[in-house]
Length: 372
Image (tube, rainbow, N blue to C red; front, side, top):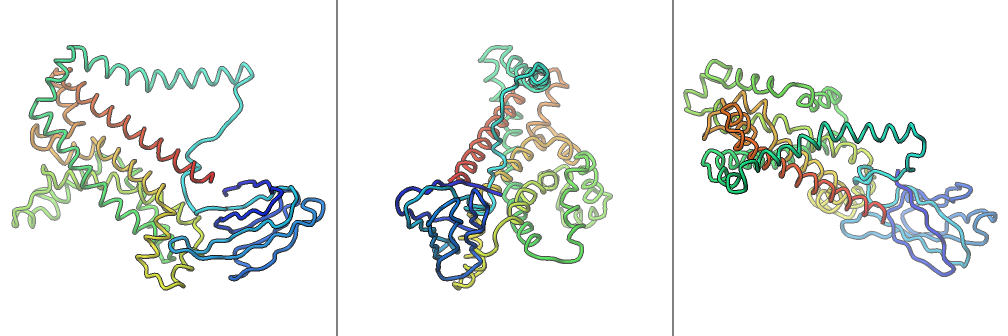
């Protein structure tokens, strides 16, 4: 739960916040609750030992797209502290921003930090650095020459196309599914939540095999697809289905915790003012979940561009036709065309770095907003 501490100045102060509970910082006496009344009024003064003779007045206002807001007016000189519980919009990604901690002081703590850094260096940084070295082993001219290869360009194009198809579809599905799951109780809800985690637990190779058995020539839907002349296996359609399956849970799993913690009074206030479902979503729900939604979209895009196992099985890995960047890396390396393989790997690594940079910026903006 979000906490913020406010020092009372020696003058009148108006503080607009989305409010659930206000309590005294010293004695923890509840001073106000947003559910207390829908008009305005005087709330209990803090006991004299903390804020002597400091009355607190509050009133509720409504603004389009913001639902119910409260104004706290500190009307009498005095100094003290109030702790505001759960102020601000529900949801957000402040929890992803990390936190501060003390520097390691003991030899054991320093040893553990050193072991962790060494492990990260060996497992992550060293292989990543080796990709850069091998990609430029033939010089800059040799590296750029691989970008003119038609098969390489087709692999890049196919990778971007798969991401362009799977990310919007799974984003739309994730938003709709998360809202309906958190806003409703129905039989089989726990089972549905377990199904959403299935792409996390099942091997991507098994995913590709399942789709092949369903849509292949001898599969369940194979004869029908052959009659109408529509190919799924060894075609872009099957690759898109495999990519959508493995990237399905990211958006919905990011949004469900945020929506479960969201204060429904904002949506109820908007409906009371006559807003329809779309207006409630666009003006109230979406602003509250936007950081989690963007975070899920980033993860979905990264997973879509880096998928290998499921796409490898259902695509057939046909060079120049059904080969993505990840498949191009494997194919080029097996053919001893190591420079082309590392050039493609470098491009994938740069895309990964760009994704991490965007992810970090999103977390910073979300954390900055949560501190306001």
